[in-house]
Image 1 (cartoon, one colour):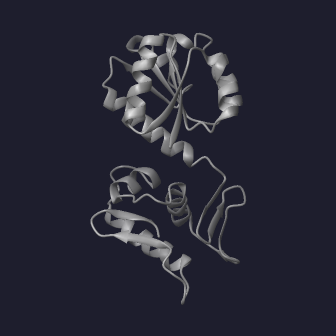
Image 2 (image 1 turned 180 degrees about the vertical axis):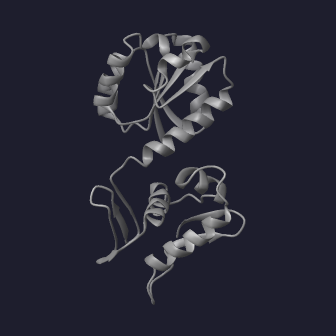
Length: 213
């Protein structure tokens, strides 16, 4: 379950957004002001902060307080004329009026990025330590190139998920790269992770994508 702290100064609009997020599979906690974030972040794992701009009139100073309370990404819901003001301060800005589906799409993207901020990942007997830049399978240390390392990090961030080639290109490289290169890099990662007699660490579903086995 993805946990959202939803900061909205208008209780009526806040309840509507909260219910909408919950229907999309998020767990949303509605807060009336930014000052409530530190306590709420301490009580539950936070994957995303969705902040209505009028509840954050302190600007960048308020964001410093939020960053000290949680490392979760921050999405600001702003007036169109104030959108540029928040650029570079928040992780993303969505200008009103906006479609609710766009809000959900932006939120899901930020939740995914936030997951990649963790420093230690594990699935099965495979472990990754970002601070040490070290990957192991059981007691064996695995040496990966930069691309294979980022690819494995993506897979380990959500080990139950299958990633399409397009999603992998977007997360690991950049849009526009030839998606056929994904197959080559997955093959290299698989060769590095697997030794004779070991189960395949990478799952491939034809037409769907790749992920952890």
